Every structure is written in structure tokens, then in C-alpha cells.
Image (cartoon, rainbow, N blue to C red; front, top):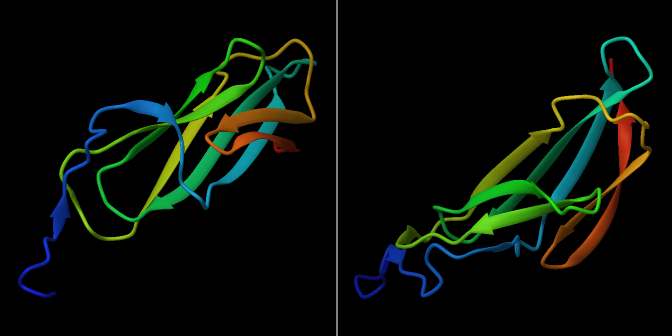
Amino acid sequence: MNPTQSSTTASADHGIVRPATSRDIVYRAFGRPYAGGPGQVISLFASCSYPTGGWEIFFTGNGQGGYNLMEKVPGIAPQIISYYAASFTTGVGLATPVKFVEITDAHGTHRVPVEMIG
């Protein structure tokens, strides 16, 4: 590293929570039967990277039956490409099983197929 370069940077957006902006987000959605009945439990997974450390990513419901992938911007962070993952589960069964879920991030809404497991 050049002595004049900093190994960390501070973001003016430190602490802001917003839709995820990573350019390489990968989504997966899984469904499984709920308690042996016709209901379905959904589990979501997201993975992405940022050019610095210290980010947080997480899912929230959007109130319209879909989900948002959100990020929390770090403060001072090392300049190293870092990978992140987030997961979410409905916990209880959806009355009507679904074949797709919609996940929104800073790049728009993505229709993610639900893969059945279990």
C-alpha cells in the first residue's frame, strides 16, 4: 500500500438504512411444508459484496406480501472487498403456498422462484 493511501474510509452516509445497493446480489427462496399441512414456510437468502467492510444487510417485509433487502452503511471501514449474507424465514406457515416471492432492492423488484425443500 502506498503510504499516502488510507486503509480505511469514512462514509458520509454512516448509519443510514436504505435498499441494498450492491451490484452483485444473488437471491434464493426456499419453501417447505408447514406442520404437515397445506401451508408453506418461506426462507429467503441473499448474498452480495461491497468494496469495503462493515456493511450490514437484512430483509424486511414490505407490507404488500413481498420483501425488501436493506443495507446499513458503515462508518469507518477497511478498503477490502467483503462478502455478506442475509437470511429470513416467515416462521409460521403461509395459508396459500407460493411459487415466487418478490424482493426489492435499490435496483428494482426481483421475482425469485421458491424452491421446495423437505
